[in-house]
Length: 344
Image (cartoon, rainbow, N blue to C red; front, side):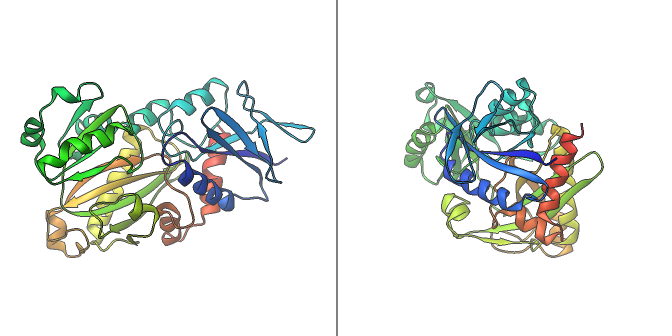
C-alpha cells in the first residue's frame, strides 16, 4: 500500500508565497510511484487540503484528516515546508506531536531555538561557535534604549532584523545613526523582538545537511554573491545573486565548514534537511572574491549567521542545487528522510 504524504505549506508570515513555491518543488521531487501526495495550505486560521482537481477540502484539526470524494484521508507523514510561523517556530510540530503524526523537520525545542536568532546565537556561543556581537530590543521597550548606546555597543554599519523569523523581511543594513530608529520600527512591524547585530565583512556561504540512523550527508558548500547590500528578498527570490556551487574556497576550508555543519546538526539534535548560513572572515576573501589559497584558508574564520530548518525547496533553491552538485538524487534524499522517520 502506498503511504500518504501531506506537504504542509503556506503559513502566516511574509514568506507565505515562497512556501507555496517550495511545496510545488517538493511535490515534483517526491516519488509519485511510492507515495500518494497532497498539499495542505495553512493560512489565517484556515487549513485546507488541495485535491488533484484543484478543489479544496477542510482539514479536521482533531486528527489532521480530510475528505477526498467519499474517502477519508489521514496522512502517514507530513513534510513541513512553511517558512516562518507556524512551521518554523515549533508551533506546528507541537500540534503534530500531540496527534501522533510523523513529520520531516526538527522537534519543537530545536525549531523554537533556531527561529529566534538571538537565542540561538547565544546558546551556540557556549559551544565555541563564532557569532556576531548582538543585542536584543523587545517591543514596548524600544524607547528605553538610546541610539548612541546601541551604536557604542554594536558599531556601524550594523544589521537590524526581527529576532524571530526565517526571512529577510524587516531587515535593514544600517550605515548611519539617523537610519537606526526607522530600521528598528521596520523590524518591529515584522516581529515582537528586534536583534541589532554587528556587521561582518566577508564571504557568505551556505551548507546543507541531513542525517538518518544509517547515514550522515553533508552537501557541497555554496558561495553567495550579490551586489545588493546583503542577501535580501530580491537577492533570494528575484535573481539578484550568484550562487556558486561548489564555493570558490580551498578544499581544507570546505571540509571545515562541512564538519562544523555536521557538528551543529548533532549539537542541536536536528532532524530532516537543514541549511546553515555562514560568513567567512579573515584571509584575503571578501564578498564576491574567492578564498582559494592555503594561506587564506589558515586565516579564515567561520562565523554562524543562521540555521534554516525548513530551507527553500524550489528547483533553483540552495538545497536542490547542492544535492545535484553532490551527485545525489533529490527524490532519494526525500525518500530516505521519510522512510527513516516512519520506521521508528
